[in-house]
Image (cartoon, rainbow, N blue to C red; front, side, top):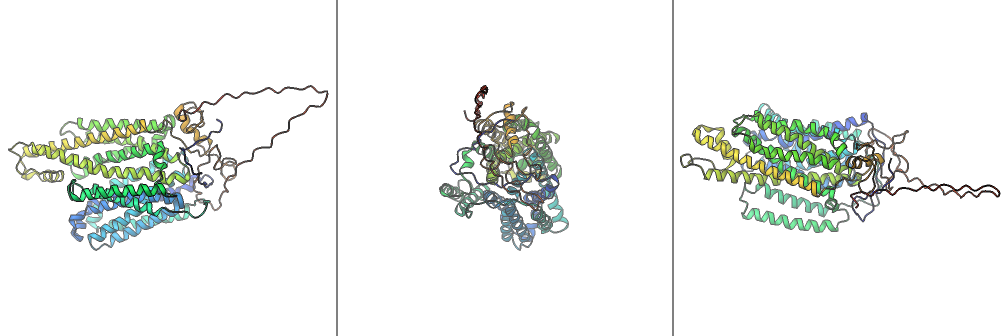
Length: 632
């Protein structure tokens, strides 16, 4: 194995926080917690889509048609702005209390939604539900990283991705069945038993080690309020701009101006806070900042398939709602499979190269969508989505694991929340941007329509979709012209998505470090990334570690008795620490923190007796270690 090496994670004047130590949990002990994590992920995914098919019944019962879109926007806004706060709280107080509190808030919001008596109370209850959903989305990913060492994380992350994909696809169908055959209130009531089961499993089986804190923990409430206000104003401007009012109207300009003022004030507060909600190292460290930008672009490009592909399938291909959903669902089939297999790739070539490979393929696939023939067959966009899901599976999961592995336990929640926050903001920006692109393309096409078919033509995407659903009032020529206009608008959206994919690719190529630094779970894990990148298995410096043939060897260092870390590998040592913060699943005891092994006493030089020959010891010279490319 290679020698010890110091691994600075970018310059930080503060000393590292003390890390909790524990034994590696057994696979059997992890199963109840993993089941609870998947239940929580299913809840968060279902409630983002399950309400879509029940809107007619909800509006018919409660009224409020003019503001029903806030049932979706309010939930999205609450989830997005709460992610950074939950990330910081989980680093400060531990994952378990934050996740339990999030599940309780989510269930309270679900109960309030089921008892809503008008549209205003339902929207307010959805915001409460979203505040709990933010804890579910952020903390579940962090606990998964705490439970499993680097070598096993792709398995649990692939399972969570599969649960998210299947729940998102099944959500509209479940919502339609409940609204049609029972009552729309059951959409929220079914969350109660599922959430209660997840709550019991987490409370009984997740045991985190005690953390040693220096003094009373401080929460930056002023910074949290600034993040809430800045994010809320920005998302409100993006969601309502071009819908409730025009982009250049007084409300839009006022919201954007207030967003800029609040963002500047938040930066000023965070720079002076002792424990900021969004610390500066999130953007100073090249690894995290590059992934933040790449995930923002990922959220941007995801709007093309999730929002505009169903419209394309129904308006251009003439499919019904269910077949159109199947066209999109092919992406959710290949995504988790590619994510599960991505470990075989990044263990050989590294996190960065694996993600670059996936995003390069995604860029080409998105750029190929406008080349599909008109009107084409349903299998053609389905194949595009199948390939796109595989490409994004190679992109997203390695970056999540890479960022989580590059930071210690005390920073993992904040780092994970930052990349999820950027993805959510990217989705909001993408919905506004690509909606404007589609409407501008349609307006241009409709303005250039022949005079014979121009009267009675709609003037926006929603009106075009409704007109094509009921084409009786249109001539065959007018209907074909509208289909071609929708086809062109969606093509332009996919070109914009390909541009966003290219931006993500550029962020990884030019901003991300060549080797992702890995905060070692043991000396063997630290060599996983370095060995994969260099192919030599030896090196020193920021990103260097040990390895043999370029493949990851991520076996945690444990004692044979209790599975605890080896003596002498505790926090603060140059050799790194074990997988800090890994919860002790199902165990009643706690493993004491490792202490540094004292250096052996220097031996006294041997003095030969008189008359005995003196033997000169050979001198051994140590070859200088090659420096890491990251530090050169």
